Length: 472
Image (cartoon, rainbow, N blue to C red; front, side, top):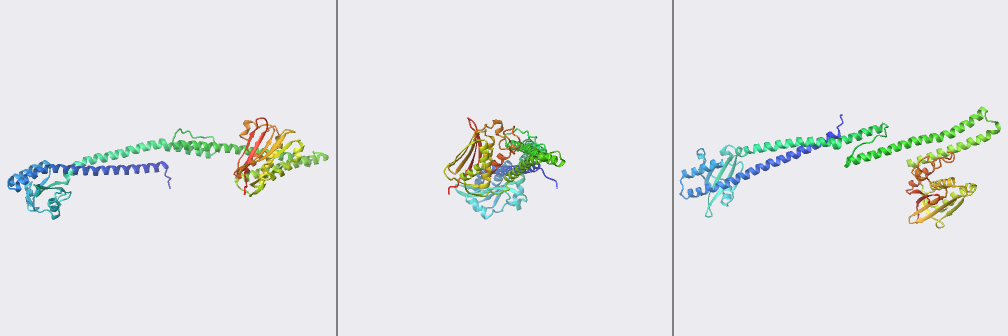
């Protein structure tokens, strides 16, 4: 089945709307002109009826002969292009405008029409007496009164074709104009639809196909201040995001490959050396211990990758319960006692109240605090200071971990939360996997909270995150 394009559907819809609209307008104008023509005809006959009425009154009173009233009817008939019948006060035809209509003398009006005429009402009919005239006629009957007394009536009969014939030219003009307007409107709509909608959408479609095939650097060049322009901007923004995602993916694969290859190469080298007998027997335990450290590092890296992937994919469920954040911090600090003493660090813990209860997943928050303390211990100078604080503010608890090490350079700040980011490029990859802060941020976001950092004006870096307080 052939697919119909949006443009063809739109053109078909617009064309149908235009045709219906102009047909309605043309039909309304045609009916209006027809009605207008009949009203003009009625006005004309009303004016000439006064001439006939004056002669008819004289005829009814014997002051005018049959020949004279017939001449009056004949002259008025020629002027008004109609056949005239004169009725007496009983509704009988007593005079006609044409000799060939003498057979109508004695014909009587309908009782209902005669009653309306006696009341002074004019009567208009478009098919009156078709049985007599054998053709459709427009009839207009005017009552005759003299000194308030009903004297008779005048019937003007005009063949319908004589009335409608002048309208044919008007109808032709109306319908030809309507057809021309339809064609012109369709051409205008076609042109502007192509320019404003179809071509821009076609550009977007072509670029989207190229992006789908891997050319993520392509962009749509559309300068427009309407919805199409906004769509193009949104599309380019999406393309920028896709390009960034693709770059991140490539960087991630490159970093993972590097981080995995390094320990695997070391392990392979050490074990291979032992098997081949290159490494002396007395050195085997030393190199095996190094290989074991590399395996532990490799295990940490893989665990961090699995944790981060699970968190970002939403494949784990938070076990939210009520816990004392102060107690979690105390236990986390104790784990670093050996590292703290080895670097002779001064650690100050300032906790707001004895107990501060929050709604968290305990294991995940311990992971957050452990990573941040580990980060602080790692980058603080020998004999430096670390401060850990909790602060209650309304419905939130603010937890901050500060170290007075070097500030984070401004050019590195925007990459801080990315995978495999290492602020200190001089450090060996054995110090950190570069995934800690990415995991921390993902866990906090999963809790529906915020985390940020700020460089102190004097010296040091402070990481702050929020937790939901339990006030029950």
